[in-house]
Amino acid sequence: MSQNPLENNRVYLCGKVVTPLNFSHESFGEKFFTFKLEVPRLSQQKDILIVTVSDRLLINVNLEEGNSVEVIGQFRSYNNPSNVGNRLILTVFARDIKNVESIDPSKNINEIFLNGYVCKKPQYRTTPLGREITDILLAVNRLYGKSDYIPCIAWGRNARFASTFQIGDNIKIWGRVQSRDYQKKLEDGRVEIRTAYEVSIFKLEKVEKEENAN
Image 1 (cartoon, one colour):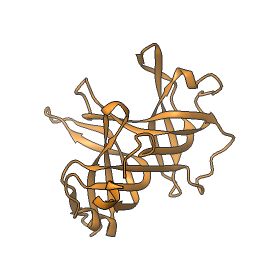
Image 2 (cartoon, rainbow, N blue to C red):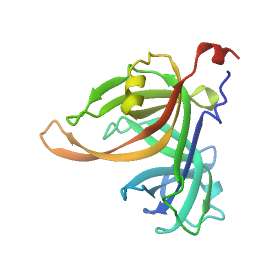
Image 3 (cartoon, rainbow, N blue to C red):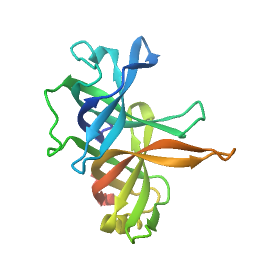
Image 4 (cartoon, rainbow, N blue to C red):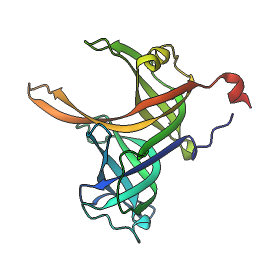
């Protein structure tokens, strides 16, 4: 099955704008901005996600702090040129964005689908309470020969299944984009609070070679 770079990385979010627009970069005369979007969970926790948006999508959208928006796009990774903080910068790249009246956490307001390749040996572990977890780094093809490297995390029986994957395996993943704060100990002994972004997996399947050949 040949992959369509526009179809193998799809994100849908609905949340509240919590930071002002910040200029990111310019490419071929098109300006891009970032802002942070707060997406609630049913557990009362919230994910704070970075969204990148083109100025060409901002004509009829109000991104003032406190406004609610719906975002359709892709989860993308970029190398961090500053070498400060995380090595990869992960952001939701908006392909469409619009204002909405309200947010209903009981509906599917944070969804992602990825179709990519395992590019690092999955890391299986158990928590002190015995919960099974497997970390997967997935390479997802993008247009123009580029790829996004997306950290994903599987739980329970999915973690056990994911621990059997090999580098190069083609995997499909369904889940949500989440943010997670953690403590990073620096060389000078100071402890810094950083934020990790990853995909929490609800469902995953391995694409067999016969399916890829069709």
